[in-house]
Every structure is written in C-alpha cells, then in structure tokens.
Length: 279
Image 1: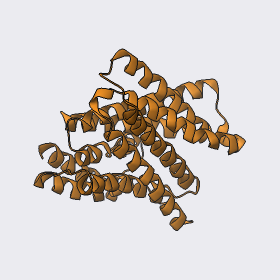
Image 2: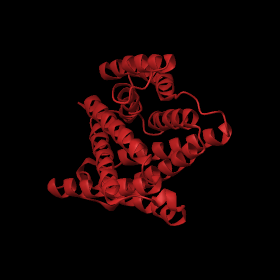
Image 3: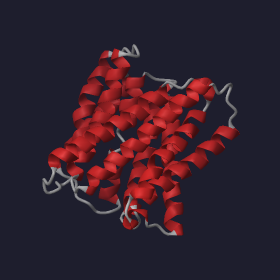
Image 4: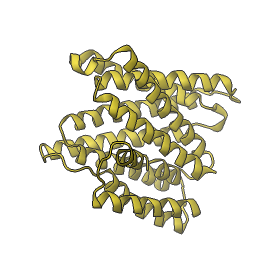
C-alpha cells in the first residue's frame, strides 16, 4: 500500500507540474506559484477539518511548516534556474538531488534499512530520473549557475520530503496545512520584489493556478500517507518519479518528440518502480 500511495503522489505532482508549466506560459510565474500554494492550503484545510486528527502537537505542525519552507525555497530556486534558459540542466539536477539527499538522510540518520531489491531499485532510479528529466538542451548559457540553482532547488525539495515524514500519524494532514501556509509566506516576498510580468495573472488564471496547487497538496497528502506505510527512502524515490508524467503528457497531448535518453530513462524508471514495489 505504501508503494501505491507514493506512486499516486508522483502522478498528482506530475499532473500539477504539467498544468502549472502550461499556465506559466500565459501568466506570471510568481503569481502562479503563490496562487498554487493558496489553493493547496484551502484543500488541505478542508481535508484536515473533514478527518479529525487524534492530536495535533506543535512539533508536528513545526515539521509541516519546515517542509513548506523547503517547498517555497525549492520553487524559487527552480524558477530562477529556469529563467536563465537552462531547463535541461536545472530540472534533472533538482530532481536527482531532491531524491538522493532524503535517501542519504533516511539511511544515515533515520535508521532506514532497505532490502536488496530496494537498493537495486534506488541505484536504477537515480540515473533514470536524470535521463527522463533531460530536455532537448538549453543553449549552454550560464550552465554552472543553473546547475547550482538546480542543486539548491533539489535541497529545498529534499527538506520538504524529510521534514514532512517526521510528522506523526496522530496529526492527520494538519502538517500539510501548515506546510502550504509556510510555502505561501516564503514565496510572498518575491511577489513584492518581482517585476510586473512575473506578477501578471487574470482571475481565471488565478483559479487554474489554485487548482494546480490543490493537486500538488493532494500529492503531499499521498506522500505523507506513504511514509506511514513505507520506509522514507522508498517513499521518496517512488514519489520522485513525477517528472515522467509531464514527459508522457508532452508526447501524447502536445505531440512532443521523445529523445533516446528520455526513452532510456522511462524504461529505467519502470524497472526501478518494479524493484522498489517488490522490495
């Protein structure tokens, strides 16, 4: 069950990224990001109120808030890297560091002991995730700076995953609520300092952005449930296959061409999912 919940998280995150990416072409990315976090906050709050938690200790809310700070910082550095025109660098670097760092923390600090099959799945997953995230190339401009942005974005994503996993089951989904609030507050200063183009968004675009954020919040709720059924390292790796969803939707919905490297990455991802599920 834990593996299925983590894969459901990956699907929801992938759908959110795909829709948010299309929306960001028509509206300012800062406005889209902030509206998304607010939409996620509304959904998470509704779910939290509908399903009563056993208890909501402050430390669990604190872990959720720390996770949200990771979300906000990850998005800010990801967008900064993408603004430099190096998607083929920043996306794979952020994706791989976002899965590798929690795996190291889980094994080294939290006492996770993956099975042999799970280790093999992790070994296959990291290069597969890199390959499937690779785009057509971005002109090679400021590659080093973009790679550093990708690493910082991945660190934020890793913080999101590790911190949220520390919240106890008794807290229900309230840590996701505090996380969305913290993420919105982290992004808010950028809304003030960004240019007019980054803040531009119509009413319909704001609503659509809120919908993508609600989908991302759903992904985090699935992930949180997965960590309560599965080792952190396995839940993180399976949840991190979300980049495969925009790639597949780009092929089927937008008629984009799949590169040989991305094909190899998707095949590797399928193999890794099978190994981690069996492990």
